[in-house]
Length: 331
Image (cartoon, rainbow, N blue to C red; front, side, top):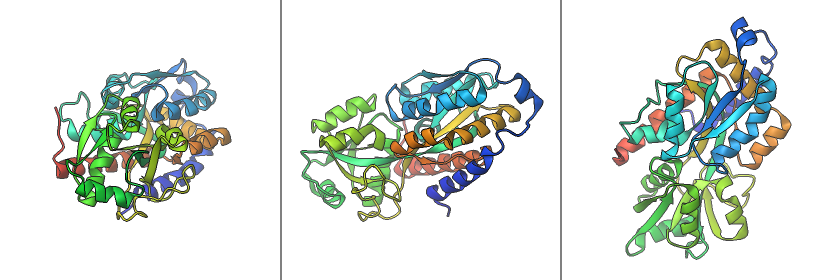
């Protein structure tokens, strides 16, 4: 079975090839009439978070290539679903786009059957931007110094452990559920309205662990407020070279990360899709953009719309299965 890393690497190779197509002629509709005005890029999370940072790193270069402003609009709340629903209902003219996220576009749909959009039908996948690792972090007061010690603590502590997340259906929630499934442990979920409040309580020792993205917790790890036990990807992260992966620490076949994808509403005309895809791929190969994304721990992807669509469908299926296996459902 093809791993998530293999899919990302394949997309990255295709992204390099797609850069050359940026200057190639495309349909006259896309070239001559689009874009003729500013483009709005909706972000489903608050300013300063990982999704917002990705958007703000790529938007200026996209604007240069498309020769129109790319305006970021944060519509935070409900695990990213407010912004996602807005794009699903938008007119498919290329002027309202979404920085799609694993939570709002694959995980939340797996557990909320009454969402106002269909993750599989209501969007056009344009280009996979990349994936950011998560990291298992505990407060510095935790007795667990390694992941093995944490697993033992989770199995033996009277009253059990709890874990924080930035909301039901987010990548932190699913990372913890996947971890429990892989390790045979049981923890209590404590959802917050965002990463900020969750991390505040984590540092204070009010909750025992979080599985947040590397960019969100890197400063706290470096300052010693939080202790990093393992990263959730198959390879170590450059910004945390001494932190082992979950698999290195003894948990086989554990891999998860927060991915980001440029998306539009369903029915987006193919000439617009192609022009956007080419612009994203060229943006991801721009040295200053790559440097900023890599500093966030991003595994850069790129690639064709077909590759993005295949990746999206695989992720929707993956998290639907986990939700069914764990019987996670909410109204």
